[in-house]
Length: 130
Image 1 (tube, rainbow, N blue to C red):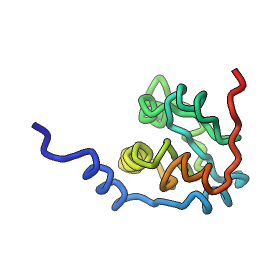
Image 2: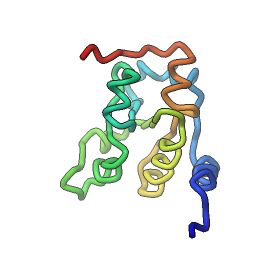
Image 3: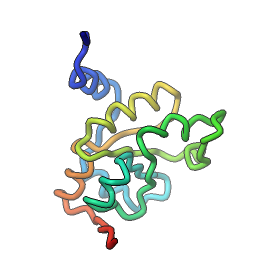
Image 4: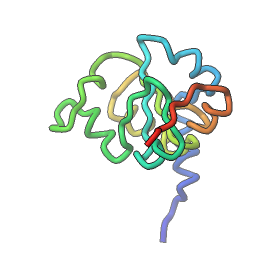
């Protein structure tokens, strides 16, 4: 039997991290000091489309990509830039942002409402043509 629900975990994460609106994220999309990071599954990207210029970092590999001591480390996460994470609706990205913040990655934030909010706010989306 579980003792804490997934929604409670998300609520706790949101209490500890920075959440930005899709509208504010749109203002950051061309900022060289910011990296938008899409943590959705590759199937979601193919089905729903991608945010142009966003880095795709699958949720299952994220902590390993961030950790400089991991054989999976990606240099972009050592760039000193601000990372703004998003998933489909803002739940997974809240948990991911909290985990990475606990690891010491700063500055970090996530988009409240995720990709859906981005799209609804008029954010550009590249559709997969395959």
